[in-house]
Amino acid sequence: MPQLSLHSPLGPLTLTEEDGKLISLDWGWGRDQTENPQLCEARDWLDQWLDDPKTAKPFPLPLEPFGTVYQKKIWAALCDIPVGTVITYKELAERAGGSPRSAGQAVGRNPIPILIPCHRIVSSTHPGGYSGDGGIDDKLWLLELEEATLPFAKK
Image: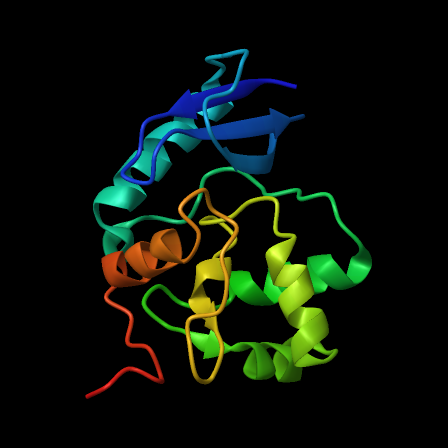
C-alpha cells in the first residue's frame, strides 16, 4: 500500500492510501515512501490544516478505515463534530449508539486520527486518553490548535 510521511508539530506522521482512499494515519516515519497524486494532496492538506484548522477545506480524499460496523458508525459520528467543538463520550454514545465505554473503545481504535477527529471526545471531568505518540499532550495540543473549550476547564 502506498505511504507518504510528513513532518508535523506532533512529530512525523505517515498517511496510507489504498485505491484512492485514505486508510490510516500513523505516528512515525513510514519505511516506504510513494509520492502519488492522492498522497501528495493529502499531505499538503494536512500541512495546511495543522497551520489553521478553522480555514481548512474539506479533506480531499475519501476515508476508508478498517473496522467493525459499530466502529465505523462511531467514526462517522466523529466526522460530524465541527472544528473547535468537543463532546463527551456519553454524548457520542447518545448520538451514535452504544454505551460511553463502547464508544470510547471505538474512538481509541480509530485508524485515521486527526482526520477522523477523535481528539474532540473528552470525559466529563478530564481530557480522556489519546493514541498519539505524545498521548494526552498531543490531544491537548490539537484541541488548543482548534481553540476548543473543554467542558471541565476552569473559567
